[in-house]
Image (cartoon, rainbow, N blue to C red):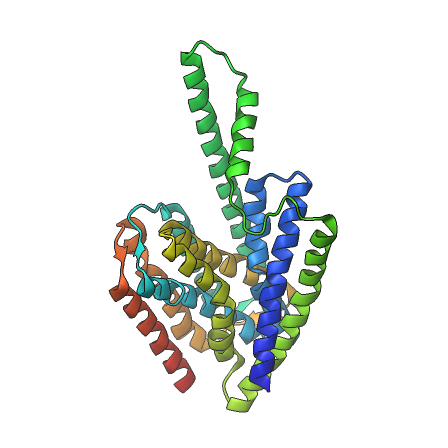
Length: 342
C-alpha cells in the first residue's frame, strides 16, 4: 500500500503543479505582467513546485535526507535519464543549439552547492541565503540578457527605418519590439479565452493539492524506507527523484520528436539550476538539512560527473545519437542498482 500511496501522492503533486502553473500564468498575463517575466519566474518556479513542496514537507517531517536526495537524484536523472531516453528514441541534434551560457551557470551552481555541502556538512539558513542569492543573480542575468536582446532588435529596426528616411522614437520602438516578443513568447498553459472562474479554480487546485500530495508522498516514502531498511536519502535519490523527473522526461521526449534539441537541453539545464538554488535554498530556511557522508563521497560526484558529460554536446555540438542514449541510460540504471543494492 505504501507504493500505492507514494504513486498517488506523486500523481497529485504533478497534477496540482500543472494546475498552479496554468492558473498563475493566465492570472499574471491578465494583470499585465510581461510574458518575459512570466517565463523567467512564474513558469520556472511553478514547474519546480512539486520538488519544492516535497523538500519542505520532508524537512518539516523530520526526514531532511529525503529532500536532499530528491534534489541530487533529480539532477542526475535529468542528465542521464531525461536526455538519455529521447536520445535513445530519436537522437538529439545539438549542433544548432546555444545553451553555453546557461550550462556554465548550471555548473557554477553545482560547484557552489557542493562546496557549501562540504564546508559545513549541513544546509542551514546561511547556506540557504547564499543559494537564493545565486538564484537572484541567475534571474537578473537572464532578465538583463533578454532586455539587451530587445534593445539590439530595436536598434536594428531603427537603423532600417532611418535608411528609409524615417525617424522613429527609440522608446516607442523598444516598446513595440517588446510587445512583439511577448506575443511570440511560447508559454505552456496560456489561454486568453480562459474565464476568471477557471483561473481561480486552477490556482485553488494547485495550492491545495501541492501540500496534500507532498504530505502523502513523504509519508509513504518514509514508510517504504523503514520497511526495506534503506535510508530516506536513498528513497529520495531513487523513487522520488525519478517520479519528479517525469514531467521533464515527457517534455524532452516531445522536444526530441519535434527536432528541438535546444528546448530539450534548455529544459534540463534550467531545471537543474532551480533544483540546486531554489529548492534547497528555500527548504534550508525551513530547517537544517544535514549532508550524509555517503552523499559527499559518491552521490554529489555522480551528479557532477553526469553534468560534465553533456559539455561536448553544449560546446562542440556533438550529435547525441542512440549510442549515447544507451550509454546514458545504462549509467543511470547501473547507479540505481548500486544504490538499492548497497
